[in-house]
Image (cartoon, rainbow, N blue to C red; front, side, top):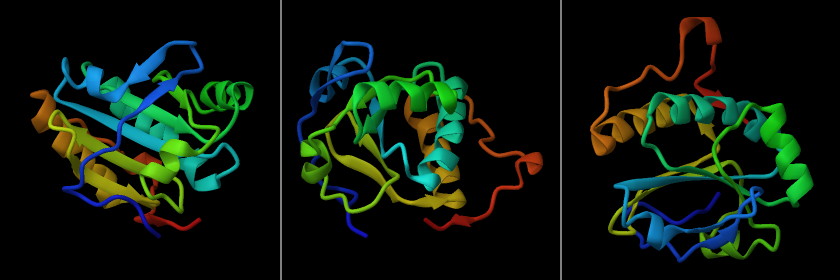
Length: 162
């Protein structure tokens, strides 16, 4: 599994969202300390498992910029967002140009991009501890109270193989 690693410079992103708005990574980072990018394909069962927890991050951190990076078309992506309860923007990478620029071979792949455009976290697949670490890093970067991403009632495995 490959992906750009921590410390690498994030490639430029200018993609249209399901909402019709154009999202620009460089411009967004002028007004926020970080952006989380979550690459996915709607047919991926691990993505389906992961995205409700990403929504918890979105709801838990009021100032978080979290973007779903879909490898599918607008209709399929909108349906995915509704089915899995995602309120954060869903961007369309249906030509896979951004996926290629991030050197991805697997989804989900999640990146924490700092205001300097450097990758602070690079997560490929689902590891509970990686997402807990991401939540802690976001609390620090956003200067917000840390959230508990998982509860005992969730019965989340440490690893969710794809």
